[in-house]
Image (cartoon, rainbow, N blue to C red):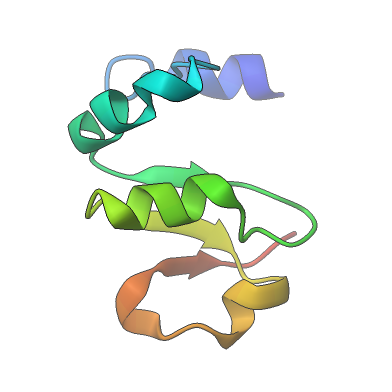
Length: 79
C-alpha cells in the first residue's frame, strides 16, 4: 500500500505530513509540486495555498477540479 509506495520514491520525494498553519507559506515555496490524492472533491485549502505560492498542483479529476483550466493544474484519473 501507501507505505510501500513511499519507500519506493523516498530517494525522490518526501512526505512532510502535517505542519503548523503558521508555517504554510514557509514550506510551500520549497515544494516542486503539491499532490492532492482525494477520492472525493480534490479542491481544498491546500490547493489554493499552493497556487498562491506558485506551486503546481496534481489532483484527481473530481468535483471542482474537473471544471478548472488545464493550464493551472495536472489532473489524474481516480481509480
